[in-house]
Length: 355
Image 1 (tube, rainbow, N blue to C red):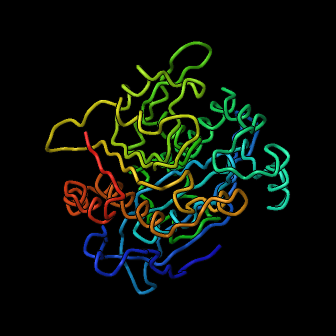
Image 2 (image 1 turned 45 degrees about the vertical axis):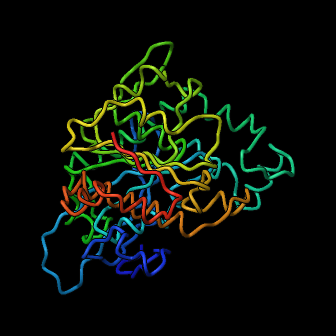
């Protein structure tokens, strides 16, 4: 368990563009609970979670409360990935909770070398970014029982937060339990994790031949990083996304190609309530691949995706503006999202749309 760690700025924008970056005036120290285990008696299982949280100065007597982001990881990852993104959010005033879902590819091997060997066994020596031939992995991802298991994992975490059990958990640091806002929860997810976040935002999921809703009103907003949109993932293109009923931001890139179009949830969801209250966004970055420049840690380490600090920084600044706008109701964030700052920041590489 770490507490009070300082987090250096990970922004990689040129100095002349600094005025175009969304920034908050308050930054916090970084606390980290490496592993906390939740008990699910109904399923007779345990769920390990990792928590990043803001740390106030030791001399502070602040009663400030911090909103929560529940982050669902991609298929290859676990609770220990996406630090570059979640630590950034925590340093800007959010408590970020990461579960390790039981379908995690990473949990089935004992080391990075084992994971690399597993990958090579599945797809051969070629490390093509489109990951062709991963039949065994896809069979796990496309299994409806896996979807249901992840949905139950997130429900367990939401119950842990909203029932205020987290505030009474003596094994967690007081710097976390005293400052958590248990009534202000949003979700984020990458790839398969974005699929789950989208379901909690209201997208209908086909199970046993029937479209079902798992919308949870406790989730105020959803940050969707490459959300799957295909029928093979239980989504009906013409129906599912029309039921999304909270603010969403979809982030993707021109090289983000996994056999589905991540833009469809944005294009097919209901439009914003009014021109004066925009709450649906699409950030589309030319040249950005499925790992968004290295947000997850795993794609770049064993599959060969390219680290790109500029892409990482784009995800950080656009994601922070989104959650500040819709979780903290920051006027500065709404003004930023209403401007063309992201487009200028991208210098011809970023398309930013609202609807």
